[in-house]
Length: 137
Image (cartoon, rainbow, N blue to C red; front, side):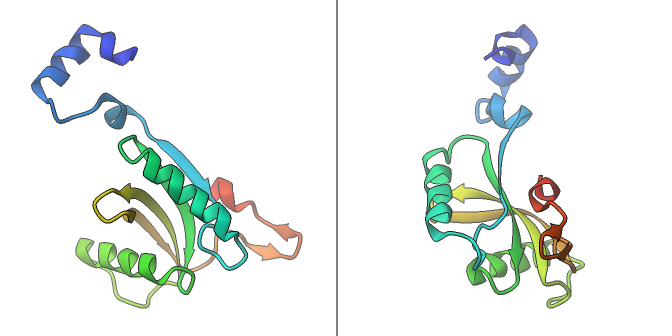
């Protein structure tokens, strides 16, 4: 609302009616360490999807670490996004940091950005692992 009150900002958005101030200047990132992972909790994943669906018109995105065999439908989306952008050879990575937004038409997550990785975010063993959530953010 503060930006919307500025005269130059008002003038700019009068020319571009389809644009929204919030999406042009900020987004809310929900970083979920175990989304879709076997060690995660399906109830938590469902709560995340419900939240994303409820605020689908807002600049709310989900960022999480995806493993090759954890969510087949999202893994396929990840591969398709990378293939469309070029320079990707199938099977060259097994992990990815993924940014998704809720797609109202499909009533499902839609992959927006992908950072493919060969190694997991959390390195180490047992209680001596790096912090993964900070890496996702």
